[in-house]
Length: 474
Image 1 (spheres, rainbow, N blue to C red):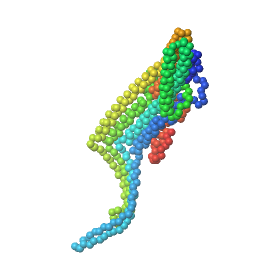
Image 2: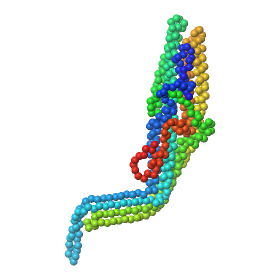
Image 3: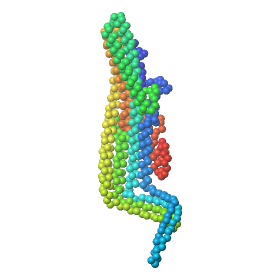
Image 4: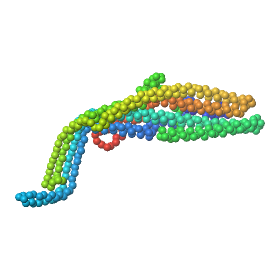
């Protein structure tokens, strides 16, 4: 677990030296934020992740839409109104014509219903249903990718803020040390022990230190903003964080194997192949006949065409067979297009596996380098502390110049910044590797948060025949 501790480096530095990210912190404030708590907040509050969950619920609706092809379609019609009608007819009898007129008002009304059931359509409904189900599974894999991305971004934002907080503290404490150094140099100049050049060198180092403080403050402010954006809450006091190596495979070969099998990017590409395959079958279904049966009835009261017609009723059950022969070639083009898309999705699957393999190897190398870098930077800090103490003692007896002391002080600050960065990289690299192998999830990390189950909403809507209420799905 990596946090802050103070490391004394001499009488001037004692009490003002900054701690690096090293060592177990045993006493923490009650209101401190842990990395696990930040991940929980991001999992619950991040709008990008919530947006992807909504997109997944929208894809769930494609299954009942496809299943609608198995169900009957019912239409009820009705009409009514007022009408006036006048009809004049001529009748010729024995060469003599007579005219008669029929005129009047009536209120015609009609009610009817039609029920249509498709019996066979070239298995298009079945293939569309399987295609929709594959789309649902692909959307869930995409949601897993989004979850991994958000959790990795949250861990990175947390560690970035922790790192920038430490670096800002380092630079501020370095300015305090340089101010003390400048005061002592001026005192020595006043008694004639050093020259004006030594004073100028100390002033220059102090100005440079203040510039580094301003840069560190800017980086700290930017990290705060990123933390708020990704995690969704304002940062408080951050506790140290630990790597998550225990959740990753112990060998590179095992990590590559796990990544190519479990990474949701690969899973999404696999389901996209299934979707494209079903699209080919749906397109081929356009070449098959369609069989349907239609039942209808109509009840008429009065008539819009005759004042003498008072009532009529019609009912029918009609079977229809439709066999496509040639429709301009569009259906054949659609089949060829679907096959080309299928070939593309298979190539995309190979690309996804290669990309995941590359990401796993890269993350593994970064983690190994981060582990080694911690030991190197710790040794660098220890050596720089000893060197600074020695240079100071030598400067007191005139064997070192003020510039030597300032250079040694800057070397120590740089070493501590390097250690802080190395500790940051160590934790982030462990999360990056866990994401690369497809295991960065609340369940694996053991986060105390109710996990989002996409299957709940799917079960709520899959067999729904009617209704416009949107289920919660959580």
